[in-house]
Image (tube, rainbow, N blue to C red; front, side):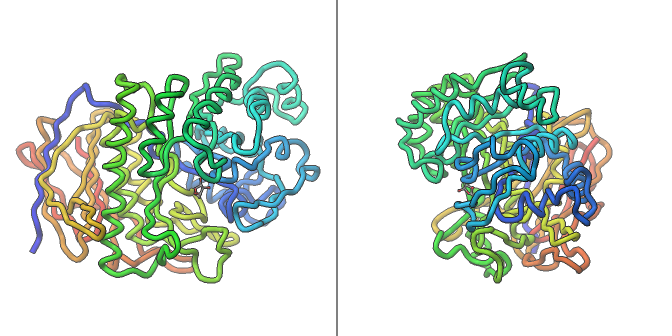
Length: 492
Ligand code: AHR
């Protein structure tokens, strides 16, 4: 029998705006994320615009991608930006030591990344090399990208770009507690302050400087960094991957019910984490000036059989889509502190939006979640409560049987609902809390089987469909959500 969940919306003008950047992406020089996933080069037979795949450009626009983080990840801390400028045939080759020992020819560098952002209206987020670089190297990179005059601007102009680019987001180190230098938080805080001092604002460009934050549950990292360097940060990051056992991560496409519910609990734990890190930040920054940026998150499975273990290529099922939707509901609800999130990663790596094989491209179930949730970008959060019951899953975690988030923009209220229950529809009654609306439309993402995924050469099994099952009457919306489904409603 269908369970029943009541959702109450509590609209208020004092609620925060959901920053579009919460729907951000991450692109690393890892496996086929950049090469083959975004960039094929101008001479490729794959249809492209100045070297970027046309199908991928279209997908970036379809998702309204607000921000892209680049060039890593762990790769960023071994990346020397000067290797990636100038005539492509003269750029040095290097070995990508982090990711499978692949040869990196540096054909996709600063110009290629920033031009991609400009072409698609995406805000760039540069992740600077702190682990193996120097203050001088990063300061000069900022100068190269954003200054009008001076030696770095001259070099940029010689390389064909007259106007500086606009650059807002600058990350100062990635995972400096791990692949980015194995530092202590005390040591990193000092390093951060040095780097932040010399990364200048040129010609009115205003950098938003991001400190490397904690891995998942490392609360001490946030505490020390906020205490020692928080006043020089605009944002601090947080990384959270849904992994059970790093030595045996499990398959993307094969899982049992217990594994499925464990994952839902693990994904929902991001709520606990955000609350705990925010509480620490509140001690040093009660005005919430500093943003918490979840700049890597998502599911991480064993690679697809037969693929390079260093390339992190995995399929993506309806289960992954549910993780995405559930996590985005949590991020929306913490919009007062969470100002950006970048799912890992955009194409062909981990929980990707897109998979490519030669000239073919597949949109994953996760792609469709981001498409459906795009209406929340830049909308004012509508706080809500639900009476959804909590399920206890493996390792003592809990997950509500239904999660939701809502927002309002230009007179349209968007409500996104996630039913994590396998094989059980749920009836939902939404009290609009006084929001005036007389029309409701919607879309649903679900699958006959939660193991379903989209693959090359096959009709899509998981794609958005119109949802006409919601009825609006006397300030309430009622609907029945199919088992393991995501429904987004639009009300006006
Ligand atoms: O996303 C893959 C890797 O995960 C990133 O390079 C690193 O920052 C994290 O450990």
